[in-house]
Image (cartoon, rainbow, N blue to C red; front, side, top):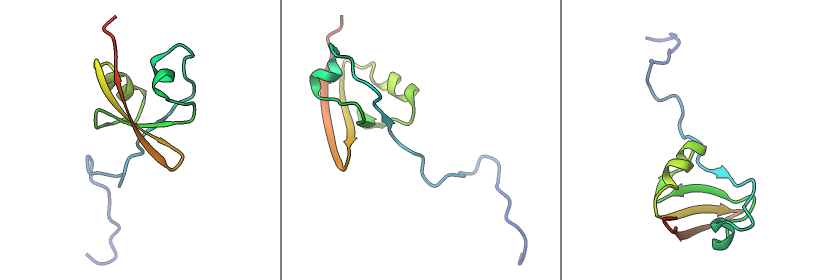
Length: 87
């Protein structure tokens, strides 16, 4: 109908694209992150090809024993492979 305002439908997608990535605010001096080259300011975009949108995503996906971390450092994109020791 001409001239009618379109109202959002509950449950309909309201966002075209969700922001992906969390910025690293610090790296533990003796941690595995420093060992593999993660730096303060890097943006972790995905872990094992799963998008990381918030700290909950990060904690869930980083729990695996082997992880591939896709991150952005400025205009550069890197994939770091990490194999963690069970203990």
